[in-house]
Image (cartoon, rainbow, N blue to C red):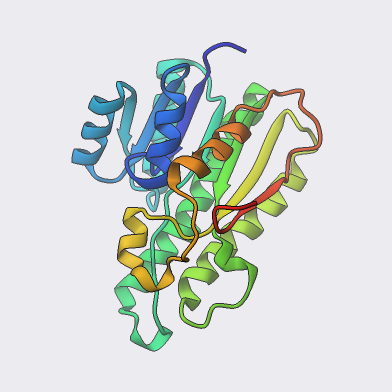
Length: 231
Protein backbone atom coordinates (compact mmCIF):
# COMPACT_ATOMS: atom_id res chain seq x y z
CA UNK A 1 0.00 0.00 0.00
CA UNK A 2 3.02 2.31 0.09
CA UNK A 3 3.55 4.86 2.84
CA UNK A 4 0.75 4.90 5.38
CA UNK A 5 -0.17 7.06 8.37
CA UNK A 6 0.02 5.67 11.90
CA UNK A 7 -0.86 7.22 15.24
CA UNK A 8 1.18 5.90 18.17
CA UNK A 9 -0.42 6.87 21.47
CA UNK A 10 2.20 6.92 24.20
CA UNK A 11 4.78 7.14 21.45
CA UNK A 12 7.34 9.21 23.36
CA UNK A 13 8.81 6.44 25.53
CA UNK A 14 9.09 2.70 26.06
CA UNK A 15 7.21 0.40 23.71
CA UNK A 16 5.43 3.28 21.95
CA UNK A 17 8.74 4.94 21.10
CA UNK A 18 10.11 1.63 19.82
CA UNK A 19 7.04 1.19 17.58
CA UNK A 20 7.38 4.74 16.26
CA UNK A 21 11.05 4.20 15.50
CA UNK A 22 10.26 1.00 13.60
CA UNK A 23 7.66 2.65 11.38
CA UNK A 24 9.03 6.11 10.74
CA UNK A 25 11.50 5.34 7.94
CA UNK A 26 8.82 4.10 5.56
CA UNK A 27 5.60 5.62 6.89
CA UNK A 28 4.09 8.80 8.33
CA UNK A 29 4.04 8.58 12.13
CA UNK A 30 2.22 10.87 14.53
CA UNK A 31 3.08 10.39 18.20
CA UNK A 32 0.63 11.37 20.92
CA UNK A 33 2.03 12.23 24.33
CA UNK A 34 0.85 14.24 27.31
CA UNK A 35 4.17 16.01 28.01
CA UNK A 36 4.99 18.81 25.53
CA UNK A 37 8.75 18.53 26.08
CA UNK A 38 8.70 14.78 25.43
CA UNK A 39 6.61 15.19 22.28
CA UNK A 40 9.01 17.85 20.99
CA UNK A 41 12.06 15.69 21.78
CA UNK A 42 10.57 12.66 20.03
CA UNK A 43 9.57 14.53 16.90
CA UNK A 44 13.05 16.04 16.69
CA UNK A 45 14.70 12.68 17.22
CA UNK A 46 12.58 10.70 14.76
CA UNK A 47 11.62 13.41 12.29
CA UNK A 48 7.93 12.59 12.69
CA UNK A 49 4.80 14.51 13.60
CA UNK A 50 3.62 14.82 17.18
CA UNK A 51 0.67 16.14 19.13
CA UNK A 52 0.26 16.90 22.82
CA UNK A 53 -2.74 14.86 23.93
CA UNK A 54 -3.89 13.84 27.39
CA UNK A 55 -6.09 10.88 26.53
CA UNK A 56 -8.14 11.33 29.70
CA UNK A 57 -9.66 14.36 27.93
CA UNK A 58 -12.18 13.35 25.26
CA UNK A 59 -11.86 16.77 23.63
CA UNK A 60 -8.09 16.41 23.25
CA UNK A 61 -8.45 12.93 21.77
CA UNK A 62 -11.16 14.07 19.37
CA UNK A 63 -9.19 17.12 18.27
CA UNK A 64 -5.97 15.11 17.98
CA UNK A 65 -7.45 12.61 15.55
CA UNK A 66 -9.12 15.41 13.60
CA UNK A 67 -5.75 17.13 13.28
CA UNK A 68 -4.10 13.97 11.95
CA UNK A 69 -6.82 13.58 9.32
CA UNK A 70 -6.52 17.26 8.37
CA UNK A 71 -2.76 16.87 7.88
CA UNK A 72 -2.61 13.46 6.21
CA UNK A 73 -6.09 12.62 4.93
CA UNK A 74 -6.32 9.13 6.39
CA UNK A 75 -5.32 7.14 9.48
CA UNK A 76 -4.20 3.65 8.57
CA UNK A 77 -3.45 2.39 12.06
CA UNK A 78 -3.50 3.29 15.74
CA UNK A 79 -1.27 1.78 18.42
CA UNK A 80 -2.69 2.35 21.91
CA UNK A 81 0.47 2.06 24.04
CA UNK A 82 -0.28 4.59 26.78
CA UNK A 83 -0.93 3.30 30.29
CA UNK A 84 -0.92 4.48 33.89
CA UNK A 85 0.71 2.29 36.54
CA UNK A 86 -1.09 1.70 39.83
CA UNK A 87 0.71 -0.97 41.81
CA UNK A 88 0.30 -1.97 45.41
CA UNK A 89 -2.41 -3.03 47.82
CA UNK A 90 -5.69 -1.21 47.32
CA UNK A 91 -5.58 0.21 50.85
CA UNK A 92 -2.13 1.67 50.27
CA UNK A 93 -2.86 3.42 46.98
CA UNK A 94 -3.47 7.18 47.10
CA UNK A 95 -6.96 8.04 45.91
CA UNK A 96 -5.51 10.41 43.31
CA UNK A 97 -3.44 7.59 41.79
CA UNK A 98 -6.51 5.35 41.61
CA UNK A 99 -8.48 8.11 39.91
CA UNK A 100 -5.72 8.80 37.40
CA UNK A 101 -5.34 5.11 36.54
CA UNK A 102 -9.05 4.93 35.77
CA UNK A 103 -8.89 8.14 33.74
CA UNK A 104 -6.04 6.83 31.56
CA UNK A 105 -6.54 3.06 31.39
CA UNK A 106 -10.34 3.09 31.26
CA UNK A 107 -11.73 6.42 30.07
CA UNK A 108 -8.71 7.30 27.94
CA UNK A 109 -8.70 3.95 26.16
CA UNK A 110 -12.45 4.26 25.57
CA UNK A 111 -12.06 7.71 24.04
CA UNK A 112 -9.17 6.53 21.86
CA UNK A 113 -11.01 3.53 20.49
CA UNK A 114 -14.18 5.53 19.93
CA UNK A 115 -12.43 8.18 17.85
CA UNK A 116 -10.08 5.77 16.06
CA UNK A 117 -12.89 3.50 14.96
CA UNK A 118 -15.04 6.39 13.82
CA UNK A 119 -12.31 7.46 11.39
CA UNK A 120 -11.38 3.93 10.29
CA UNK A 121 -14.99 2.97 9.62
CA UNK A 122 -15.50 6.11 7.58
CA UNK A 123 -12.46 5.20 5.46
CA UNK A 124 -13.43 1.55 5.25
CA UNK A 125 -10.07 0.21 6.43
CA UNK A 126 -7.45 0.44 9.16
CA UNK A 127 -5.95 -1.38 12.13
CA UNK A 128 -6.08 -0.78 15.89
CA UNK A 129 -3.65 -2.48 18.27
CA UNK A 130 -4.33 -2.22 21.99
CA UNK A 131 -1.38 -2.98 24.27
CA UNK A 132 -2.56 -4.83 27.34
CA UNK A 133 -0.47 -6.84 29.81
CA UNK A 134 0.13 -10.49 30.65
CA UNK A 135 -0.88 -9.54 34.19
CA UNK A 136 -4.42 -10.24 32.98
CA UNK A 137 -3.69 -13.95 32.56
CA UNK A 138 -4.09 -14.69 36.28
CA UNK A 139 -5.15 -12.83 39.44
CA UNK A 140 -2.43 -10.53 40.77
CA UNK A 141 -3.15 -9.63 44.42
CA UNK A 142 -0.35 -7.08 44.44
CA UNK A 143 -1.70 -4.98 41.57
CA UNK A 144 -5.52 -5.09 41.79
CA UNK A 145 -6.22 -1.61 40.39
CA UNK A 146 -3.74 -1.84 37.51
CA UNK A 147 -4.98 -5.29 36.52
CA UNK A 148 -8.63 -4.25 36.77
CA UNK A 149 -8.18 -1.18 34.61
CA UNK A 150 -6.17 -3.08 31.99
CA UNK A 151 -8.78 -5.84 32.04
CA UNK A 152 -11.35 -3.23 31.06
CA UNK A 153 -9.38 -2.34 27.94
CA UNK A 154 -9.01 -5.97 26.93
CA UNK A 155 -12.72 -6.63 27.37
CA UNK A 156 -13.60 -3.54 25.37
CA UNK A 157 -11.31 -4.58 22.51
CA UNK A 158 -12.85 -8.07 22.46
CA UNK A 159 -16.33 -6.64 22.03
CA UNK A 160 -15.32 -4.01 19.48
CA UNK A 161 -13.45 -6.55 17.37
CA UNK A 162 -16.54 -8.74 17.23
CA UNK A 163 -18.69 -5.74 16.29
CA UNK A 164 -16.76 -4.76 13.15
CA UNK A 165 -18.23 -7.49 10.91
CA UNK A 166 -15.32 -6.93 8.52
CA UNK A 167 -11.60 -7.61 8.57
CA UNK A 168 -11.03 -4.38 6.68
CA UNK A 169 -11.25 -2.64 10.05
CA UNK A 170 -9.20 -4.78 12.43
CA UNK A 171 -9.19 -4.45 16.22
CA UNK A 172 -6.45 -6.48 17.89
CA UNK A 173 -4.61 -6.67 21.18
CA UNK A 174 -1.13 -7.62 22.30
CA UNK A 175 -0.23 -8.51 25.89
CA UNK A 176 3.48 -8.15 26.62
CA UNK A 177 5.09 -9.16 29.86
CA UNK A 178 7.27 -6.87 31.97
CA UNK A 179 9.76 -4.89 29.90
CA UNK A 180 12.60 -2.57 30.96
CA UNK A 181 10.75 0.69 30.23
CA UNK A 182 10.00 3.86 32.15
CA UNK A 183 6.76 2.32 33.40
CA UNK A 184 8.77 -0.67 34.61
CA UNK A 185 11.09 1.67 36.50
CA UNK A 186 8.07 2.94 38.39
CA UNK A 187 6.92 -0.61 39.03
CA UNK A 188 10.23 -1.73 40.53
CA UNK A 189 12.58 -4.61 39.83
CA UNK A 190 10.50 -7.09 41.81
CA UNK A 191 7.98 -7.24 38.95
CA UNK A 192 10.58 -7.80 36.20
CA UNK A 193 11.08 -11.46 35.27
CA UNK A 194 14.56 -12.90 34.96
CA UNK A 195 13.87 -13.54 31.28
CA UNK A 196 12.04 -10.76 29.49
CA UNK A 197 11.50 -9.19 26.09
CA UNK A 198 12.90 -5.78 25.21
CA UNK A 199 10.57 -3.06 23.91
CA UNK A 200 12.30 -3.27 20.53
CA UNK A 201 11.42 -6.97 20.30
CA UNK A 202 7.78 -6.51 21.21
CA UNK A 203 7.53 -3.51 18.87
CA UNK A 204 8.09 -5.77 15.86
CA UNK A 205 4.86 -7.59 16.67
CA UNK A 206 2.90 -4.37 17.20
CA UNK A 207 4.19 -3.14 13.83
CA UNK A 208 3.28 -6.44 12.16
CA UNK A 209 -0.32 -6.08 13.30
CA UNK A 210 -0.49 -2.41 12.30
CA UNK A 211 0.80 -3.22 8.82
CA UNK A 212 -1.73 -5.95 8.02
CA UNK A 213 -3.49 -5.29 4.72
CA UNK A 214 -7.23 -4.51 4.55
CA UNK A 215 -7.90 -7.80 2.77
CA UNK A 216 -5.97 -10.01 5.22
CA UNK A 217 -8.43 -12.46 6.74
CA UNK A 218 -9.04 -13.99 10.17
CA UNK A 219 -7.10 -11.49 12.19
CA UNK A 220 -9.55 -9.01 13.67
CA UNK A 221 -9.89 -9.91 17.33
CA UNK A 222 -6.45 -11.55 17.37
CA UNK A 223 -4.91 -11.70 20.83
CA UNK A 224 -1.13 -12.00 20.96
CA UNK A 225 0.69 -12.91 24.18
CA UNK A 226 4.38 -12.24 24.69
CA UNK A 227 5.36 -12.86 28.26
CA UNK A 228 9.01 -13.57 28.86
CA UNK A 229 11.04 -13.15 25.69
CA UNK A 230 9.59 -16.38 24.30
CA UNK A 231 6.31 -16.95 22.49
